[in-house]
Amino acid sequence: MTNFISNETIDAILDSPDLISIIGEYTRLEQRSPNDWWGCCPFHGEKTPSFHVDANQKFYYCFGCHKGGNIISFVMEMEKLPYSDALISIAKKMGIPIKYKNGENNNSDFHKKNDEIEKYIDLYERTASMFHYFLLETQQGKKALDYVLKRGLSIDIIKKFKIGYAPDDRKWLKDFLKKKNFSNDFLNKSGLFSQKYPDYSFFSDRLMFPIFNRRGQVVAFGGRVIPPADESQRKYLNSPDLPQFKKRETLFGFNFAKNSIRQNKKIIFCEGNMDVIAYHQCGLDFAVATLGTALTVEHIKMIQGFVAEGTVYLSFDSDGAGQTATWKAIKLCRENDLTVRIIRLKGGKDPSEILLKFGEKNLTSQVNNAILDCDYLLLRLGEKYPVDTPEGKTKAALEFFQYVDVLKSDIQRESCLEQLCQTFNLKPEAVKRDFINRNRAQERSNIRNNTNQIEQNTPVKLDAELRGLIAVTADPGQFKNIRSKISENDLQNIYARRLFKTLEECYIEKENSFTIKDILDCLNQNEDDKKLVQVITESISSGVYQSERIGVFVQDTIEYILKNRLEDQRNKLSKRIKEYSNSIATEDDQIQFNNLLKEKLELDKKIQALVKK
Image 1 (cartoon, rainbow, N blue to C red):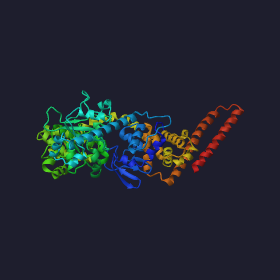
Image 2: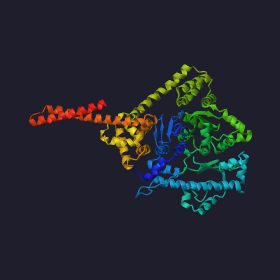
Image 3: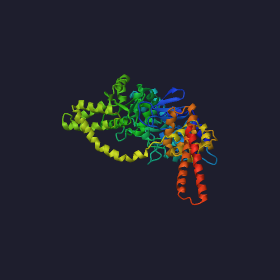
Image 4: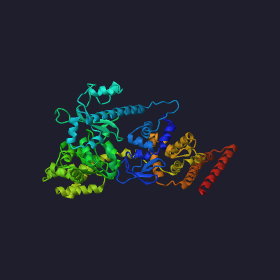
């Protein structure tokens, strides 16, 4: 286990009961028995839970995509971190002190970056509190407070989202923070100040919306102009990407919405911060918003485990840009096997205006009456093209095919193509021919591009050797027995040899006091061992290795490997005997030949004895 983090820290991480809570940040888990938790896999799209977490053995396994491992491999995969960096990240989340091996010190770039991120979060938390104070408690913020109250926001919702006001004085913030012992250089890199004029605040005379990470910490800001405002000003400003904040990976309001998303199995994607807050105020607290970007793959990964069995609602503007965003979001969600409905707002340009004009019941009713994406697209295509002409019908169908392409189910595809035919009065045979012919060339291209991928993704060979060593992994106390009978060189299966070597490393390092958590941890440090980890966790999760049967598995494996070793020796000996029989010239040659025959006879007896067992 080659990293600079001490074994004491690693053991504390692997033994921590926080496995369920950390994985629960990424997907909704349900407890089925004291130690068994199940949910939809955060690594791939699915609607039926196949992701299993064993709280006792401290590992997870997905029966759908076959990914498995321990808490360290989970964080490595979800956060795209190398092994040592994942250790540091988990330790900080769990509140575990990070200790280093003798002679080592904290030289991790990630650790330094993580410390920097924590300092930025502290800075943004303090700044958010000041902006919030300005809005609620000062004369300077009265104009902004009057504006949000007129928009129908309650004081409770203002406090919940910690909405604030950035003063018009652009030099005030820098002077204030320097008095709090923040260095000038650190502040200049913080994203709070103009790059061209570093003493001037990036946000001034704006309504301020703190942007929280999934743990509820302020990592950035969104600022909105307060009407009436200079038309040359941008209506919205968001913080730039920062060490603690990436637009593509952050959703406004997710920290407030995630529990409701879990419970309701619904999520509303909006365009703006005020849209999210309006939905939350009327009790639809599963709304979130992107931050100046279109919906991204990273956003989908954030919410997929929470809403995999539920529905994604899209609430984007009805203008051209909003409809383009809706179309892209539909395809992205469907590519990830998520059900999609579209909220077609009526009576106002956005949710907050509808809430103000008509009240909570009206807005809630419009959400409840959201239509399926297929129906929405057919309505839009009917408005976009002259579908009373052959040319218009063809264009509408070709555009609709792009939606059908991303559907995962053949039944869904068939149903949507039938609906297309009914909506635009088309013959099903003609539509299906056009759909199939359009895709054939692309399918041939995809097959050519993927010919090499099959070889790279060849599954691990789960033979008798590997099965036996997985049994030892399930009960590491068996390793002392197996290592006394066989060695790594006796194994033919390359994955079995790798697992034997890992067991040997753990046995020596832990002095025969190691667990499955230690074995998976050791394997997770090598990128090439991911397939092996998946097979191990799948096999153990399947229930094959019951405690009372493990000893039998191990003994059968020992006998199988010993038999193979003896047969290999006999084959080599038979080859020597055959070669020797043609070159006997002296009495000594005859004696040597007879000795080889006796040796082969002894090998035959040993092999026969093993076969009888």
